[in-house]
Length: 181
Image (cartoon, rainbow, N blue to C red; front, side, top):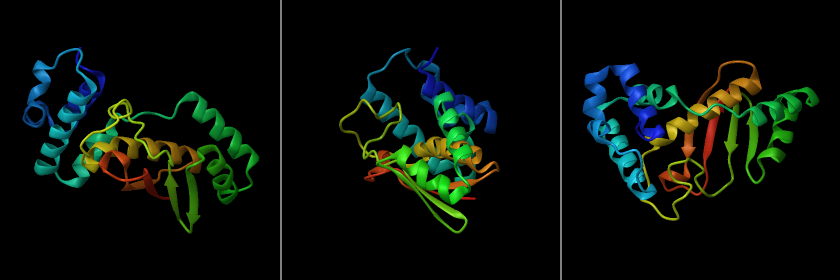
């Protein structure tokens, strides 16, 4: 079995575009070892994302990268549900949820939430073990954006859209998203 994150990438491409395109975008998949050093994984991830950026449009990239993103954990869901019960409205929830995210935050302006993780370090499994790495395309971070969409769809009880403003893995100082509710 290939390294899970690469399996998910290949699987998502294959499901969205078919096997021929998956092989074109990720020819290394067929010969991937079961284990790779973290820095080699980051290099391969960058190569695949660069290919996707070159050959695919933004909407297709988002569909692929968000297809099998991380779900909110059971603990996150429980904490969100508890905060929703205690909050009178979304504005109050955002204030309380910001305490949960601290040093990150959620700011609401009209129908837009600005969400900051506030970690100043990438927590993605690809990069969290690396002290230094070459910044990667925002295409990689669309997976995390999918997680933000799932989380805030749960919070808002409806489908939301989100865009990446800044991401640590891409060379930013924080992971910040604009969520349209």
